[in-house]
Length: 350
Image 1 (cartoon, rainbow, N blue to C red):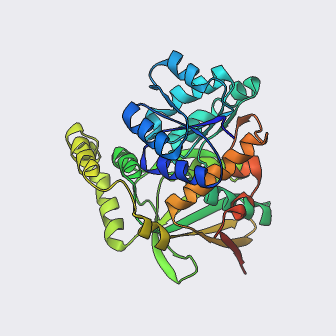
Image 2: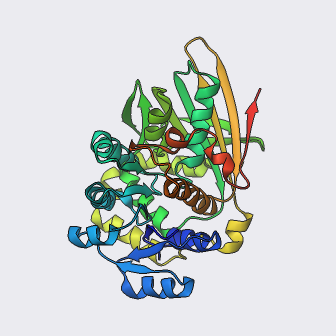
């Protein structure tokens, strides 16, 4: 199979996906802006390469020519998704990415009718953001069809890539978000806290503006959604204090300082960290009659899971399984999609 692109192939996660693709016998075309870096990786992996910049529509269209799909891995995606999606709709190429950004999910959801008319699938979030959590949300909805409230939680063991850290830094001043009565509502950082048992005992967790605030609604129709992340009390306090420094955190001086610090760090978790890492998810759905269901899920480290999930979805698209329009992982492929990823285990808590 040689008719899909990995854009951003020399980034931390893009390279992990490219190497896993080769291991699986796939032959993607590697793409990006840096000719030297892309060519070097393509030569090492014996893969074709195309070089183009996202701000050149003609070059982008030419780069997509003859491709079934693009797996977009160059974030922060708020800066890049529109150009790629535009080109996909022009060239009838299916769009996949590994974002976790609410604005990207909502921006692509708004183009559902356009994508349907073009026969193109727009499916963002095919990595750790949001395949496992989206599937867990859909599973809970399956268990309790009358659900009106959904809470999801996550606990990750492992490091963070520079791309993820940059996205977090850019959004520090924006606070949090939840969904209420079907609408996404801005809330203060660490708006709510609660203890969650991910299977190893209760951990304190705080609300975060994770992608599921958008996608879980599209997947399940549940109108009230909160997403939590396990965080020590000190981190929760820092998040709450950030409410009073939004102007400072969003200033160009602080943003430039944070991004320089991020650029000076390692690209992402080491192979040992990924091998020893783990992801834990928890979900709870309730309805207005007081019924409640709880499920838990565990899987590989987050970036490893992203590579496996992204390629699982890509293989489905290449096999012709690409329903047109805006999709979420569970909406397109069902709540059990995640169980096809090695190491993922799900349990229902009675």
